[in-house]
Structures are given as structure tokens and as C-alpha cells.
Length: 333
Image: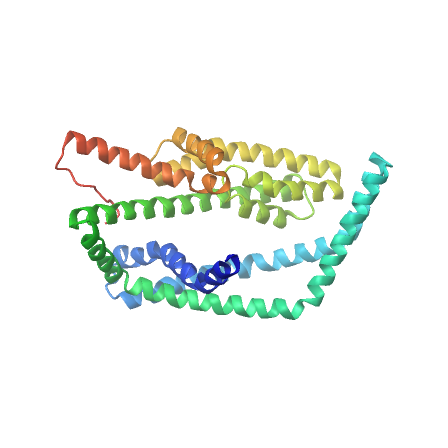
């Protein structure tokens, strides 16, 4: 049964990715249609994808060479870093258990490299499959964005037949609010992660003078999208690598990441996300703590948009109690 479910998920992946891509690009499309007053949907859609591809090209063209150079340098330094780690652990203890553990790690790394080489052809096929799925997802997203009004009208009519027209209208408005909350949260978190990446890069390169500042900033920027604990998840390997290169640099990088993570949690995240979602900073912090404690990583990720939705629903309920004829207001319409 698990294999069957896995096959269904793999087959439907381009569909899910296409729907997600359409949801991400929809605000850009709305910007071209509403702010720039481009009435032709096809022209606005072409401009949307051209803008996104241009942004990706600029980022790749600007950052990729530095990333490649840093990775090449790191790969050259790996043997030396491994010897340093081996010597360091040997100084800590001559226990046979430590040596066996190190031997096991070395064997696993060797097996991993051998497997990567032996499965090179399989990896190429996987890459080609991923490219094909990516192209299919883009095509699906295009059709969704072109026909989004018709899709929404059909969905509203279908819900109307099941639950009544007024209930269907309220459900569509709540879905709009939820979509706006999630998209606002993701955009706010992306801005916060970009700020963190830039601060880490500046501190790593110009203050601490670490050997791989672009890798430090890239890892922190990516893992920082995971709320609350993401920065620490990315920090662990970075601190270890820099500590092996030079212990003082590893310690200083740890202090820098710790300080910036506190600044982000207490100032940057609450300020940006509360502005994006129109909820108070204290609710952002409380929702992350409760969501992470009850539902783990998924709870951490969805805590803030769900908290915003609950607050919106509570506001609607209180206003409806005070005025029974009041309808749900969807500001995104």
C-alpha cells in the first residue's frame, strides 16, 4: 500500500508543484494586471514569467560563480579538515570506541562517494526527470493562472450545490484569507531570511574573515526558512567546519549566528511577519511556540498563518455577534 501511495504521489507531483507555483506567481500577475493596468491576461502572464526568469538569471549569474568557487575550495580542504578532526578526537580520548566510530564514519563517507560515482547515470536520469516534471509544472501553472477565475467560479458553484450559496461564498472568502496569510507569511519569511543571509555574509567575510563566507550565508539563508530552529540547524555544520579550519573563527561564527538569531526572533521576524499578516508580534512568538510544541516542524512552519487565520475568524465572529447581518470581508478581492 505504501508503494502504491508513493507511486501516486510521484505521478501527481507535477500537479501539486504546478498549483503551488501558480499560487506563488499569482501576486506578481495581479501586480501587472492591477497596478500596471495590463488588461490582457496573456500579456500579463508573459510579463510575469519573464520577470521571474530574469530575476532567477540575475541571481544565478551573480551568485553562482562565487558558490562554485567556495565549494571547490571546500572540497580541496576536506582531506585536511578530516585529518584535523581525526587528530582532535584522538587527543580527547584514546578509547577504542572513539577510533571505531571514526573508522565507521570514514567507511560510510567512502561508501557514499563510491555509490555516487556508480550511480552517476541514474542521477543524470533523475535530473532529466526532474527537468521534465519542472516543465510540466510550469505548463500546469500557466493554465491555472489563465483560467483561475473560471476555476474559482466552478468551485464556488460546486460548493453552493453542496452547502448553499451563502455558505459557499463565505468558504471562498475564508480560502482567500488563508491564501493571503500563507503567501504573506512566506514572502515575509523570505525577506527575513535574505536579511539574515546578508548579515551572516557581512560578518563572516569582513569581521571574522571566515574561509567560506558565501557558503555560510547561503546555508543560513536556506535553513532560516524553517521557523525558530532553522538557523541552529544550519549553524551546526558551519561552526564545525570553521572550527576545524581555525577554532577561533568557529567560536566567533557561533557567537555571531547566536546574536543574529536572537535579533531575528525578537525583532526582525515579529516586525516583518506582523506587518505582513496584520497580527501583533506577541502573537507571532506565542503561535510559533505552541505550533512547534504540538505539531513539530509542520507546526512551526504553519503556526503564524494559522494564527492569523484564527484571529481573522475570531474578529469575524465577534463582529457578526454584534451585527448579525455582517458578511465576511475579504480584503484581497
